[in-house]
Amino acid sequence: MKESHIMLHSLLGHLKDIGIILLRVDDNSMMNKALAKFSFDLSSTASIVCGDFNDGLKELTSIAHEAGHVLIHKKMSRDETRDYVCIMFVINKLGVDKISPEAQEFILKVEAEASRKGFQLLTNIGVQDGELLTIKQMMKRWYASYECMCHEKAVSGAREKILTDNNPVFCDLL
Image 1 (cartoon, rainbow, N blue to C red):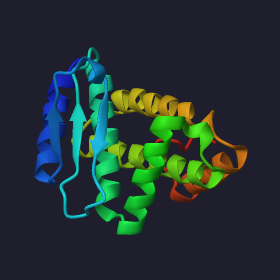
Image 2 (spheres, rainbow, N blue to C red):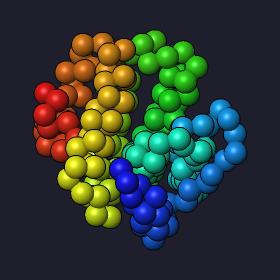
Image 3 (cartoon, rainbow, N blue to C red):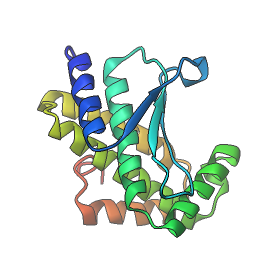
Image 4 (tube, one colour):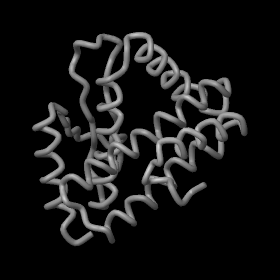
């Protein structure tokens, strides 16, 4: 994307307007990565933490996807937040293939929804069709990297939700 820095500037401005904070870190372990950061305390401000990126389109897409996670978090109940944070902790320590199919399905649904919300943010700031197609492809690859480690039951449940929601990122996946 030729104008990825302009789109990134627009996205960051939009995120600031809707109350999402972006924290940049100078840490090699965060190179080409972004993540949503939130806690059990629903009154705490969720944010996005990211390192430097070599690819502007990947940076834009990663930040938008993580913003999708923050938007999901803002609407979660305390119990949903607890479940999500605990599941993510276990996934980060053991791997997604080591959790129950029910927890896998929950994660797949959250990942698909974060992509949907991130995609909508990018549409809202004026990212054009050609770039949106490339962004969809990137989001689908990321999602598929989770799906291939999950139980068949979890995958089918998540795909049913994607269909029901008519998720524009994945409409041609199924």
